[in-house]
Image (cartoon, rainbow, N blue to C red; front, side, top):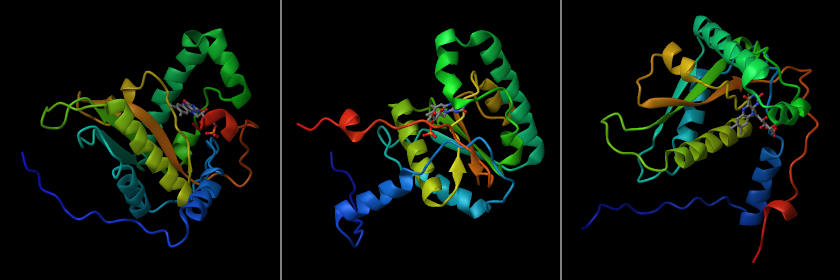
Amino acid sequence: MSHATVPHQSFNPGVSSQVAADAFYQTLRLRRSVRQFSARPVPVETIRSLVACGGSAPSGANKQPWRFVAVSDAAIKRQIRLGAEAEEREFYERRATPEWLADLAPLGTDTDKSFLEIAPWLVVVFKMMKTDDAAQVYYVNESVGIAVGMFLAAAQFAGLATLTHTPSPMAFLGEILGRPAHERPYLLIPVGYATEDCRVPDIHRKPLSEILVER
Ligand SMILES: Cc1cc2nc3c(=O)[nH]c(=O)nc-3n(C[C@H](O)[C@H](O)[C@H](O)COP(=O)(O)O)c2cc1C
C-alpha cells in the first residue's frame, strides 16, 4: 500500500555533532529536581512552547497518547496541593515500605507540598489509554515517557526549574481537572524558577562507564 511522504528536513547544528552534543549535555547536567519554587511568573507562551517540545516526541504508531494540562489558576493549584498532600500523608504513614522510605531519606522529601501553590505553573501530564476517538494506542508508557523527557529537557534549556512529582495514586488529578476516563494521570510537573536560596540533595549520577556499554 502506498503512503504519503514529504522531504525530510535535517537539523544542522552548525558545529560538529560532538560539540553540539556536549553543549547540550552541559545544559542538561545542571537539571535538578527542584522542591523550592519562587513565585516568579512564566508566560503562558513559554509553557506552550515547552508542551510543543514534548508533543514533538515519537510515539507508537504516531498515536501521540499524551495530554498536557497546564494550570496557573490559584484555586485549582490549591486543590491539587491539598489532594497531593493527602496522598503523600497516606504514603509516608502507611503505604511506603521501610526500604522505600530509606531510599527517600537522602532526598529529604516530606508531606509538605507548598511548592504546588507557589510555582507559577503545574503541568499535569496524562497518558491516553485510547485516542479521543476511542481507537487503540500503542507503547503508551514509552511514548509518554519520551514526551515528558523532551518537555523536561526543553524547560531546562529555557532556564526553568521542574520537578517530576508522583503523589500516587494520582486519580485525584483527573477528578480535579475534569479529565475523561481514558486519560490517566502520569506525572505532575511544577514549572517555574527555583528560589534564590534553593538547595538540592547532594546526590550523584552514575558515571558514563557504568551506564554505557560499548561493543
Ligand atoms: C517517575 C519519577 C517520579 C518521581 N516522583 C517524585 C515525587 O513524587 N516527589 C519528589 O520529590 N521527587 C520525585 N521524583 C524526583 C526524583 O527523586 C529525582 O529525579 C531523583 O532523586 C534524582 O534527582 P535529580 O532529578 O535532581 O537529578 C521523581 C522522579 C521520577 C523520574
